[in-house]
Image (cartoon, rainbow, N blue to C red; front, side, top):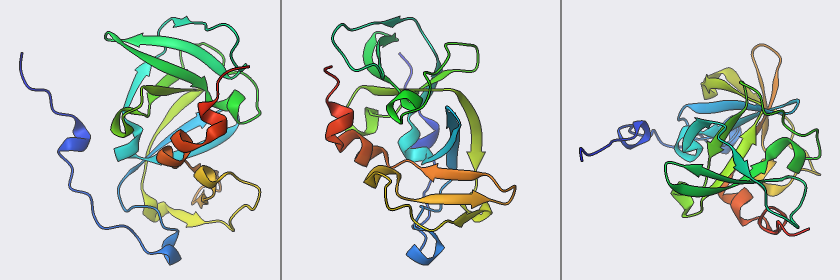
Length: 169
């Protein structure tokens, strides 16, 4: 079988930006939408993006736990990110995607998101005043040159959040 190389394996990452610049790594960011919220995550944490496969529901779990997905023979625990954040459930339509976020961190976790927006450059973002009531993994927020607000997703922080890990109802 030929060796497969991921895009992120071939990229050299520049050093992180200073906290005065908002603290986001100077790598390209992946933009996605969960409900009405726009989110960014470093491309290195984004993992893989796939169309939504059929999900196997799991009984006695939180409403935001969407179920299990089989992606090329590997099972992923899928969380509806908009519902987890307190919004409406993500419709299972042609725009919905699974963002496989946990592989880099040794966890088979995926986020069900409303749609993929695309790559964003940190230079086009301006740091907002930190939100006090935001979870640690979503503390940074930005505004782009078009006036859209974005939250920055710290994948490692989300995967360590006890609320995210406790899927039992």
